[in-house]
Image 1 (tube, rainbow, N blue to C red):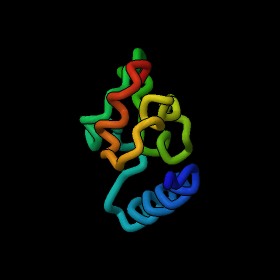
Image 2: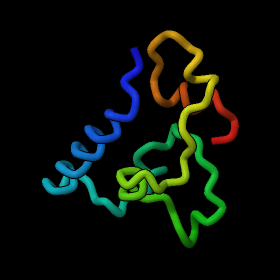
Image 3: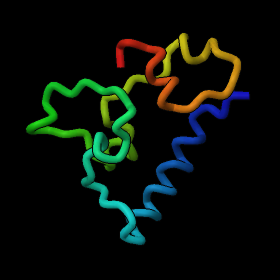
Image 4: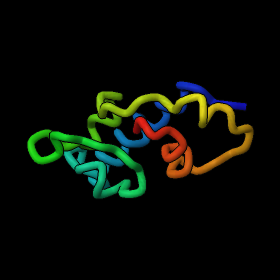
Length: 87
């Protein structure tokens, strides 16, 4: 069973707690904490993708495509993001 969009809410709440407790900085560059996630950002020098962009769903990532949804077995996010070359 797929969890759908409700996981975004829990993830944002967890990130908010980690920021509040000074375990994470909301201005941390995403590649420094998630290097295995492929993402092409032509503006990374002037406008890097930050943790706050992930929490606000404004990082520029697309939703997982049909390739990921057609797999009927659990898989790590790092593998799922490699299924769609548009990432």
